[in-house]
Image 1 (cartoon, one colour):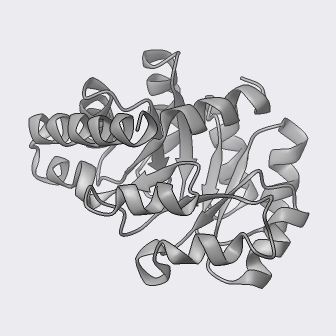
Image 2 (spheres, one colour):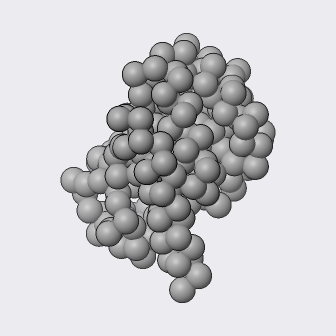
Length: 212
């Protein structure tokens, strides 16, 4: 999957389900439940044991979607994820070494940023999409303010995104949004059917936003 193709799939997906779990089996089950509900973008965090193996299996399961690696903290994890087939790399902060490696392999890098200086470094490092994190602290108006000095910046809010404020984020200029607990949270207790129902609700809301 080349960089442009991955970026298109991320933006087309609109909703990126951020999946965390104690075991690879549970992470895979949560991801599949979200996919069943219509979500085509999954960010599987590297806090999941053997996350690269799960990414490899999910990539085969969702050929028309995009599976990325989240909470990537170093270049070793980055390369493992890329070799497993990750379509993009997400980290909680900007890391220049991870950015270089992603650029080398032509894989989108979405670093978490919360300040102007971090975002400028991310843009300089070649990030096509910047993850506004934690979004709950910033609020949707942050994107409008960011676009004053950086009108070219693509923003993905993550952390605090829910069905009630999804419209506000996209109205403010988000290109996509990361959703975690409000979307996949029930999976922690094994309620995968609820994850699927949540995913359906998110996709219904997204479609209404995009088709208005």
